Length: 268
Ligand SMILES: NC(=O)c1ccc[n+]([C@@H]2O[C@H](COP(=O)([O-])OP(=O)(O)OC[C@H]3O[C@@H](n4cnc5c(N)ncnc54)[C@H](OP(=O)(O)O)[C@@H]3O)[C@@H](O)[C@H]2O)c1
Image (cartoon, rainbow, N blue to C red; front, side, top):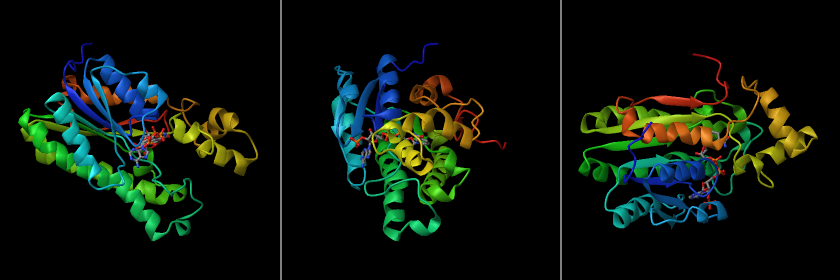
């Protein structure tokens, strides 16, 4: 299937690792131009170097950063067609999972909303005039299964992601008539550095459960969460859903949520 992405211009946030890296790689494979934003690049992102890829160093805790990244895309490639709001997860200084609602301070709640909701609000606000100039475009927001299935160990994270999913729906209604589609992809547990790196979530669960990182990833978590597929989602599987939504081939899909979670959510 030709996704008709050749020559289109995309911004991907949180693009140096995990899901954002897989989205960036897939968009490039489909012929798009990509502005990839993160605080630092990574060897994996550097390996994708091409005239179609620009890395922008940006800290999405800084309220000015999202608009600067959007402007950089227009400066580098002359337009904007696609925005993937992927940066999210625990912000600097916050560690997940928590034990209880009582463990999250005001400051941590604020940081969580800055990173997972307000940075996307700011990026969308900056992107919309450019998308309108092109006669439309696609925005894909990366939410989480926790938006619909809240958990006391990720209480502020789930609330921020629920806000992002809600925002997606309202924007799809306001800007759909002008050609801008806005959709959500909600991953379940995805095998990314957030889980796998030294000191990441898998290590934290391993020390609580008295086991090792690989057992957590391969057995403990899939069993604990009753994943239908019996395994973590791969970042590429999320990226494939994102890139399909970014494509004009999804022209009638807006305000939708694509769940890529290995059967984590059990309800309709
Ligand atoms: N992995 C999962 O199980 C899972 C499940 C549900 C939803 N999600 C969502 O999927 C998205 C991506 O998660 P992931 O697992 O791929 O994360 P990841 O592997 O931890 O990668 C995070 C990316 O975001 C960048 N980043 C971190 N802090 C940043 C900041 N302050 N400003 C700008 N960029 C920043 C990182 O690069 P730098 O550190 O260089 O900035 C990196 O490129 C998040 O929105 C997350 O909530 C993930």
